[in-house]
Length: 260
Length: 260
Image (cartoon, rainbow over all chains, first blue to last red; front, side, top):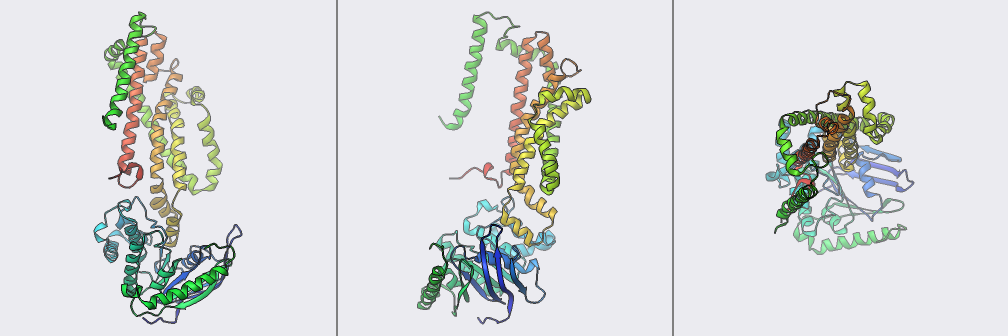
C-alpha cells in the first residue's frame, strides 16, 4: 500500500515539561502522513505516550506547534483514542460504552444504534452488545475499547500501547484484526509500543525515540506486501526486526538513566 | 455443616443461651420486674402493649426515613456542589465537619428550643445521617478513572455530561455505602432527639416511650421498646443492603458473586 506523502498532522519542535520539572519531550519533529500506519517505538520514559496525548489534544505542548491538515483541527470526531487499559465504564453495557462518543457529540440513541452494532460487528462482538465489561475477557474488553474509538469513523486512530497487558496469543490475534480494520477503513493509525516485533509487524513506518530528552532517534520503513502469519515467520520480517532492535538499542544507549 | 448454615445457626444458639442465662438470673435471684424483667415478661409486655408500641414505632420510623431521605438529598447535593465548585467546597466543608463532630445529644436540646418538636427531631436525624453520605459521595466523585475523564474531554463533553454520565455513576457504590451507614445513624439521631424532647414534649416515638416508661418504672415496657428499636435498626440495615445489592448487582465487584 502506497503511503501518501501529505501529512495529516505535523509536530514541529514540540517540547513538554511537566510541572514537576520532568522533561518528557525535548524537541520532537514528526509528520503523520494521511492513511499510514505509524508506530512510535521507544524505551519507557521516552515521551512517546506524551507525544500521542499532545496529538490527541489531551495535553498542551510547552513549546512548538501541532498543525492539522485542512479543517480538521480540534474536531473530536476525527480522532479515536485507545488507552493501554480498556478504560470502559463498568456500569454500562458493551453497546452503551461504544455509544458514548456519539452520545457526547449529541447523536440520539436511535440514530446511533445501527452504527454501534455495525462497529461491534467489525470487532467481532455483535452478540456481546448487552454484556457488561466485567463479563468479558481482557482481549474482548480491548476490542470494545477499539470499537468505541472507531464508532465515530475517525480519520486518525491513536493507540497507546493497547495490547501491552494482553497475552501473546490474544495480542497476535488483535494485531491481525487491527491490520484488517486499517485496510478496510483506510484510516491513519499512530501506534505507541515498546515492542519491536509488534511495531514491525503492524507499521509501514517505525519512528524510534530516545529518552531524556525525548526526541526522534531513527526512522525506518517497513515495506511488506502482506501482513499475515507468513510475514511473521519470514526472513524479511526478521530482518526488519533486527534493524529496529538495533536502532532501539542505540536509542537506549543514547538515553542516560533508562534501564533496559 | 456448611458455612452458610453455621452463619445462621451459631448466632441463634448464642442468642438462645443468652436468653436462657438471662431467664435463669432473674428466676434464681427472684428479681422483681422493676429491677430486671425476665425475657418472658418482656415478650408478653410487647404483645400486651402492641397497640401503643406499634404506633410509637411508626412515628420513629417516619422520622428516621424522612431523615434518611433528606440525608441522601442533602449529602449527595452537597457533595455535587463541593465537587463542582472549589469556592463552595472551601466555604462550607469545614462546617459540615463541625456539624458532624459535635455530639448530636448536645445539639438536640437547642434545636428543641428553636424548632417545633417534630422538625427538631427530624433535624437531629438529618444532622447525624447526612455526613457519611456526603463524605462517601465526595470520595466517589473524586475517584473517577482519569483516562475516562480524558476521553470525555476529547469528545467535548459538557460539565453536565461529565457529572451525569461519568462522575455520578462512578460515585454510586460509595454513595450507597454511605447510605447504608446513614440508615442506622438516622435512627440514632431520631432516638436521641426523642429522648432529649422526652420530658418536655408531646412525643409519641419509641424513644419517648422508653423515657416515659423509665419515669414510671415500667421496665418491661422499656425492654420491649428497646427490642423493637433494635429490630427496626437491623431491618433498615438489611433493606439498604438489599437495595445497594440490587442497584449494583450487574456491574460492581462488591455485588457480584464469583463463579467457579
